[in-house]
Amino acid sequence: MVGELNAAKEGSVWFSRLSDQNDPLDTYPAIVESSRAEVKRALNAFQKEYGSYVGFSGTDFKQAAKNLNIPVKRFREQFFDPDRLNSSVPKTLETSRRQQVICCFTDNPKSTLMWAYYSSSHQSFCYEFACAQEKLSDAKRTIGKVKYLADRPSISTVEAIRWMVRSSRKDNLPKSRELTASDEEEQKMTDALVLAKSEEWRHENEWRSIRPLTDGPGYYSVGPYYLKSVVFGINASQQLKEFVSETVGSAVAIRELKLLGHSYGLEFAN
Image (cartoon, rainbow, N blue to C red):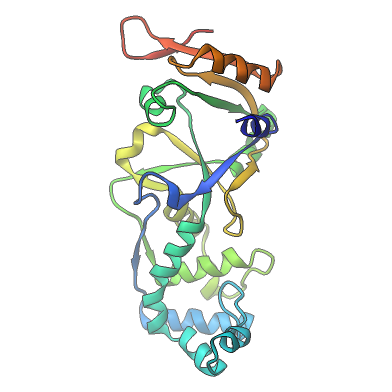
């Protein structure tokens, strides 16, 4: 716990894999096959820009074929087969989805359900992060609001190809029109792959921070946010409060929740 508290003081929090979330349908889009002609145009554009012996994520076909002891021509032809790609994209996206690491937040620290879900029946604490007013524009690039939907979002095969190419080539973005997405499509893909959940979870008021696919689970900064306070649930022990308060130091406020009058609601005691 000391390591976690010290990380929080530095503005860092633990990011876990999306596959470890309690909802297996979290960001689980429906994949719709594009026409063979559309997929072929996208593949041709990719080969023209990046070559015929490299995959979307930079895989070296020659080395991969050698490792598998198969002819490189056969390996390349299989990868650039439109029919095969149409059928393999859902599996590829699912692999990426499971590898994605995220950290989840809520904008409602007084939610009795959130305390029941995530703090062992109100016995633990939560962190309150804030940012300076002048850093709000940067903050919007750090944390995004989850979108609660009645139906799963749909992604076409070609949209998925464009997303995979751009995600793996941030320093060498495609120039071809076939591989370039509009701002609307970019937002749609981000929402579908990392920010979409069933509307049944709407009560969580969730926001989430997302790391690049190359990152694994671990502590990462959420700057420009900083640790403003630690908030204790109504069943937190005095021993825990004293330990946390001593560890985080006087620069971080300590707040406690209590029941609100005769209702089931919560309010800050201090």
